[in-house]
Image 1 (tube, rainbow, N blue to C red):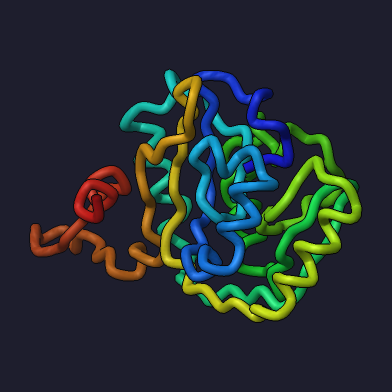
Image 2 (cartoon, rainbow, N blue to C red):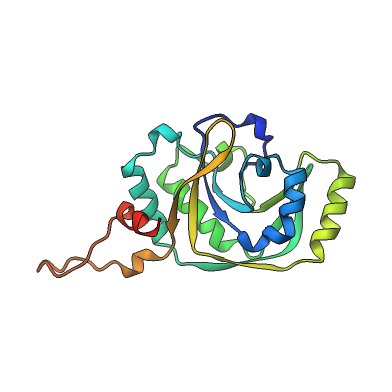
Length: 205
């Protein structure tokens, strides 16, 4: 999620993320100690878009729209081969970031009123946060340990919607990538198969 202290989150906030479970064994210890979002329930991830719509605005129609947008994108492999830095922040850097960036751009284009990170940055750097709000010596120690375990290669096949309930981030839905290629348009004779984004999402839950 965003590089903010977890205390800055508010109930009803949402975000779209790509989970990276392949990185958990490498980063979990460091994230639990050095990343407040981990203690608030956020798994190792790359943020697709945060903040997204308030939870109260996400109905079946929005679910269907998210599914339609993301379903047009194929699954892909993400490779994390090096560390990167922002001030006070240590992260794993996806190389290349093309697949993640396309997901972010697609969602931001569909909901332009919700730019990535509230429009704070001219160029969004896609990343997997390991530590934030830490002193340089702490970041150096963590980075040295992480480098010995890289690269991490992850298969990206879904985007998750998380909601903050006031205490923890919880998964509300998961949207598979690539399902649109299986959609068969109705040929007018009643023989076609059509799946809405919401229906397909339910099939995957």
